[in-house]
Image (cartoon, rainbow, N blue to C red; front, top):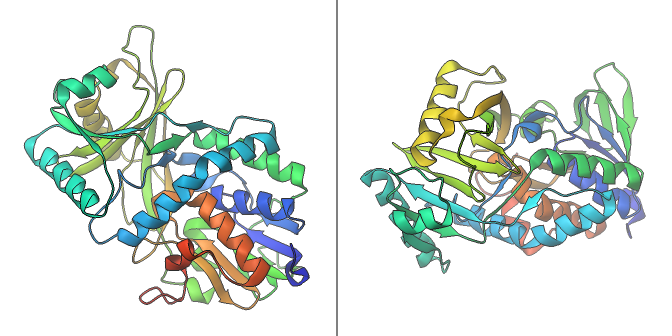
Length: 373
């Protein structure tokens, strides 16, 4: 880094955001100590890995759409750099996304989303059910229409996390398998009562960030999400090659391919504090909704049912910026941690270099109206 004031960085949180920032800052010449009892765990380990700002666009969240789109444009270069730095696959899948609807109400919702995106200058391709099944033969007969979003991608979250940890180690990041209790200017208090001193502390602890600093209390909250992992059995139909998602009776469900024969199905959403137990109702709804979109899933093997805690904020925008001198925050990415990783890394590096984030990341400033920590 050109600013020697911030040479020594203590980074709290080892999910996709923390690992990405640690790798990049170490590669830029910082001394980086990453504090996390289980790097690569938590919500990042559970995530579906969608990179889909257009497919997830919704009314009133235009700033979130712009932030996600800016980060998505950076993903191919980010993935290539990561693969080189780790000498391992980044996990990026560039096959695109289909957003489909089964009943008339769901298809009307997709029509509204397409009109909304068109009004903002974004284009998506509308298709009939027959045309969609030419793209993905495994789509269920109940799918009667939808949207093709070729620019929305996905990433194998666990492959990316393995690559990020490997790249961080190669860059010289020091991993501290400990829990942080509090973060203050230039210091991280650990659970055992000891303290790490640093030039700047970076909070990237996901759903638990609100416990670490008074400025985040009540601003960052855990939002539970259950996710299933399926594997094709020899007698079953092949899984789709693209991400397939859509509303089913108003509930959002997505199926993200994990080549050669896997699928990630998600995700429920509950406000239940720090509870990560998987419920029977959640599994039932996910499987039932997924079968409405993709045929033959009943023949698949259910290999995993897990839950993670997304870091939510009041307006669904992340928090990327200064909380106070000596404390930087990069959290609150909700369901977009992987999507937002490249723009977050760029913003954190710029903030440590000269105090200012790129213009595209300004909506995520913690001092924004309604998001004042």
